[in-house]
Image (tube, rainbow, N blue to C red; front, side, top):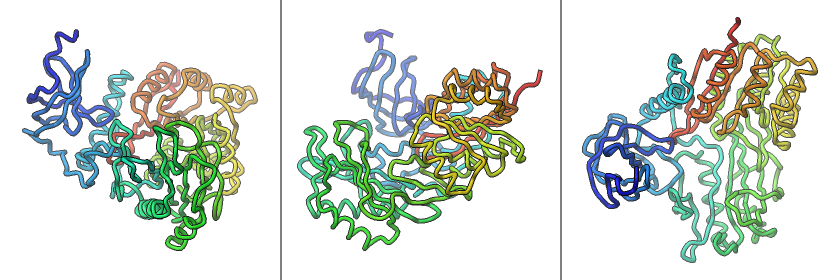
Length: 459
């Protein structure tokens, strides 16, 4: 469609019907075949919208007034919802969110994977889909010469000043606000990203869901953290839950939160938490699932699908810090975990030792490189588990898995689109999809995780 043929104009107001939701939670409307994306709308609704931007193939609009509402609509309880970019779908009821997430998975399997005969189970949600995040990392900045503390506005680096976050555990929500107040009172300079000046870039806190232990991390541009002793003293006096206070130093002009150097200022280097009876040591930069309650649900499904009797050899192809591997090791003969990040493998080995698990072996490297070596060494898995990043599995790993011919493949996914693509390839490689279970790991957002069971088709 050429620009001269676009059927809408910037600032034009018109009534539209919404037909779909995008991955970022925007509603989709069509005007004479031209696609408009409008945040805040829901499929089945009608609304007066204002066109705010047009491109050759699509445009963006702003919701002015609903003329027909969906029964899945809810009133967002968060006072910052309209500005903050952290949550996208608080305007959808809990039941509606679970239904949409199931539909997202079903549609991806059909449209991308060509898997039209697969039944997707109802999404497993939380009884209380609030205050679930065990980690919060809040940017600190100078705005209009003042101390700004909160999350970024949608599609910007401007901070929405906030005094609470409704999806974060209350204790760490409170602690980061207190840390901010102490830093501001003692004139610890916030970071100015345009001039690359100031000291304090982020305040991060995480809590062990089962243990209650808290870690606080100050991310600074400078080696020195001014008023360090005062910050520490006032925090630990108010919050006995704190077991570790650390400083991470990030001297670069970058959007990345953490730098390469982390030092413990007070207490331990780690805090501890548990998932499914397995204890994990968590350092400042460790990857650890932010919703342990639903992680246990998701990994429980993976364990169920693995169908372990104690005699199986299992390969965990994206093992991270060993979360799934150690879960599986309790019921498997032996688990082999591979991960490209050396620090994660180091954590996995420590976590195995911490839990006195001796039937788990961890190796640094690419799965598609390491697994064939294991095969040459006579390691033949009965089950392969994959939990890849959003980009999905490398094509060479798909080839490696189908060549290994395990009886079962358990695929844990955080991206329905790449899941559907990979399931299509695995199906072509001699496997069939038996079960698909979505899990709502991140309520109030459009993200959905899945556990999938595939079995080998015996010819």
